Length: 49
Image (cartoon, rainbow, N blue to C red; front, side, top):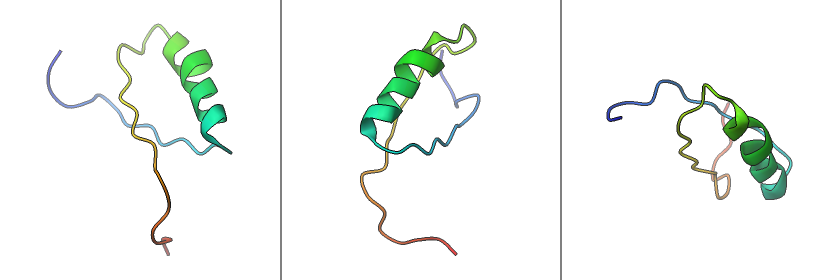
């Protein structure tokens, strides 16, 4: 399948281990999820308003 993603999901978790658990145990287990592209934020450079 080529083209733009069908949706974007922003997830806020406590740490890397919690994020990985969310991806592996929750998100990837959904039958409607065909592909996951993960781009975790390395660090916050500037806080928003």
